[in-house]
Image 1 (cartoon, rainbow, N blue to C red):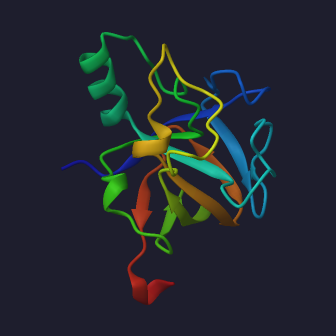
Image 2: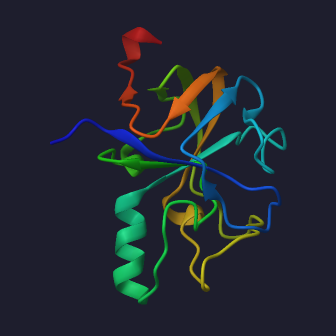
Length: 149
């Protein structure tokens, strides 16, 4: 199995717009991805979605989604996001993230979908930034063992 990694760093100017892969960005502690419309709005500072989920949705629904289409900040590859638990910590590039929410309750507001399909509420992971830093396409993602927290 390949090392889990970031394959896209995505942001948007408006919360209702799809995010665009900008290749790299700065994650700021207590804020999120600098330049992203969702930054600073809640403890859900950074959203993660697996490219494997995007590929499944493309096949299932006959759509052509790409990283950012579902409004995630970081598109991951090789990491089973749904195996994570609240409180888990991830080293992503220079940044340290802590999982604060897995998915969203169905009744929670979700402002964006791609061609009628919404993945973040079911398959997204939301984190807060504990230590800021640069994150770049290709950066490894490491789930820290509990003893390193």
